[in-house]
Image 1 (cartoon, each protein chain N blue to C red):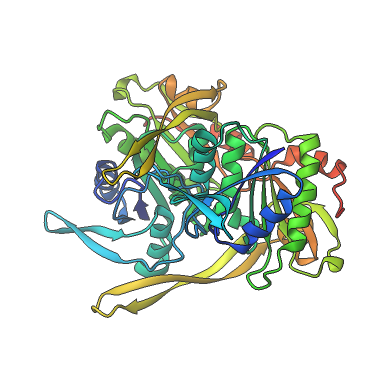
Image 2: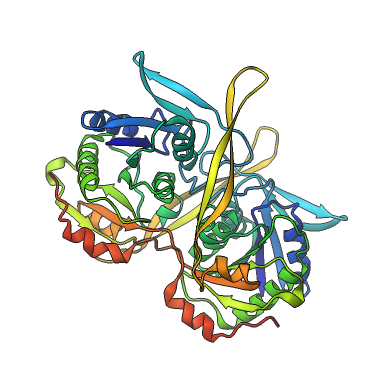
Amino acid sequence: MHILLTNDDGINAEGLYELYRRLHKKFKVTVCAPEAEQSAIGHAITLNKPLRVKEIYKSKKFYGYAVDGTPADCVKIAIRCILKEKPQMVISGINHGPNLGSDVMYSGTVSAATEGTILGIPSLAFSLATYENHDFRFAAEFACLLAAKIEKTGLPDGVLLNVNVPSVAADRVRGVMITKQGRSFYKESFVKRVDPRGRKYYWLTGKVKWLRKPKDSDIKAVEEHYISVTPLQFDLTDYRYVDILKNMKIGLR
Amino acid sequence: MHILLTNDDGINAEGLYELYRRLHKKFKVTVCAPEAEQSAIGHAITLNKPLRVKEIYKSKKFYGYAVDGTPADCVKIAIRCILKEKPQMVISGINHGPNLGSDVMYSGTVSAATEGTILGIPSLAFSLATYENHDFRFAAEFACLLAAKIEKTGLPDGVLLNVNVPSVAADRVRGVMITKQGRSFYKESFVKRVDPRGRKYYWLTGKVKWLRKPKDSDIKAVEEHYISVTPLQFDLTDYRYVDILKNMKIGLR
């Protein structure tokens, strides 16, 4: 199987490299990732500037392609311009930090996998649910196992998997839980400062405050040391509300 | 009612101004919009640089705040830093161009309304479904009408409305249709060029090719000259696939 590997932490990220090393033992892997960190970039694509692609070497060996764009850009340009054949899978990660609950909306890691899905390729997103521990080995091992499983079973059209691995020692991981997206809420604020030229600026800061984490949610699963696997799709319609809206009889005047 | 008004085409966009002028007659309106065009920015937020806010005047009268960030940034910073009181509604638009089908994933216009919803405020996104005609008056009129309606009824927690207005003369609009998100597909490619210094660059280009536009979809409604109103939510879980995944019994090895 030929895997297109990308991320949103950038081509120099450790999580990407660890995943590359593990997948590479079993699969053909092409790395195409953002040149710079693209966290919280959402599903952005670059329309109003051109993109450049650089070949990146590690210890004198070819490692992959760096693009001065977003994770979704990387997937698009790899498939349309760089790869001679369509890859059989898109994998994004391993992100350094969780992508749980409403964070999924802001996640570049997930958006790369979404782009793969939009282009008709089975796609997986992986995150290590911590901002501290840098040991990606267990998460990479599991990513490789899940990729092999999905290679056999496939994924339905329009579905991607969002995987979050808890940051605990491998022998303390309790198993895999199929979850639904919880809802997270940030108690956020802006730090207001004045620059050396006397002009005000604002810097976003904030603490996560979980809002809804039912038993079968991604947030709860990771808290309880399970690997969370959430199937995602990108029809955002709120079907529960369609009929209520119809009954409101909104007219032209 | 106090409305926070934003967009993704930027503070100088005609669609924003037309909507401001119309809403302003009936409501208190605060404009806070990106300084520069932010199309296809998805739900990006700015974490790794500070944001600056400028006061913008039109014909010597205060018009609103320009932020050097994304539409979601504008909503966050307006609510957290600029406004003294929480607005009762967030309105995004009028976008110059449709936000239909899978485009919703890439849309800065929709993401601003999503951010409002995440922050607990009823939010509406408006788009004029054309890249040509610049006459936003009918769309602005309808936006004002819908805002007044939603002011009375409210919206359920976690639901926003994505509205696309067809670009035809007002008397040819056939009515309002409550729709679901269709699925659109781009036949896209990259133009490959060489810059004056001999380096290659790539520029994304593409034509929309509709993939799925069932009778009750946003895409079909606008094609048939209806105003499309789609209720959106941001739980991306594919509930149909949860049980299938559970039956796959994915383990740790």
